[in-house]
Amino acid sequence: MEKVPPNSIKLILASKSRDRKKLFDRAQIPVDIIPSDFDEKSIHEWDPKELVKKIAIAKAKKVMLKWNGNLENRNKPAIIIAADTMVLLDGNLIGKAQNKEQAFKILTQLSGKKHELLTGVAIIHSVSQKISVFLDISIVQFQILTPSEIQQYLDATDEYIGRAGAYSLYDRASLFIDFVEGSPTNVLGLPMAKLRKELQFFGVYI
Image (cartoon, rainbow, N blue to C red; front, side):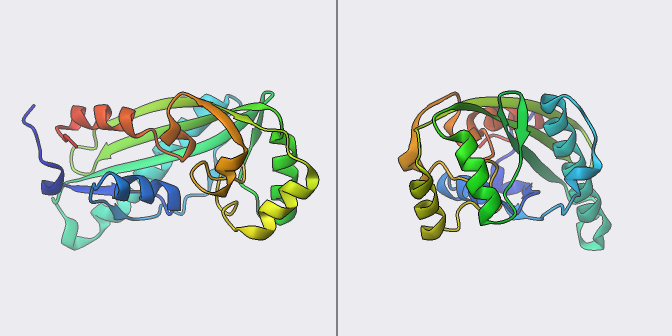
């Protein structure tokens, strides 16, 4: 397949995640943002690994429809990248905190334990509708946190908002993490090294 320079085809990130956008910015990869606004609760799947993949696919397809539905974009190719990340602790899924009280409860659960970060990623070509889906898993070890340390963290920053597990690896919560096994960028919501390789199947080399 002929190589396509990354700036010759639109890369669309189907997410309003602050961390995912930062990953592209830090790597100096141009990307447009079109949030999917997909209702994640509408998908029912008992297997967490399949759940994150199915949600990522649904997000990618919804943004593809948005892109193709704009007359200005008709027959204009774009690569749409969507992802869904969830925390798995002792076999139980932990989502995003809706408020400080929920964030406090989540961080109390994570304190002193290892947990898994599951990220499902879907890539779709807006014209051919070729799709690629993959899963990445990272393991994070949290230090033991006292209730006062958790409360101080939540009072000092709003980084828990919109993030799986109510924390951000590269922000203040980095003080609480002993180690990460696997892709560190996966903990931020997108395994960039794996994404780079998958994009090559679409002729995009970044």
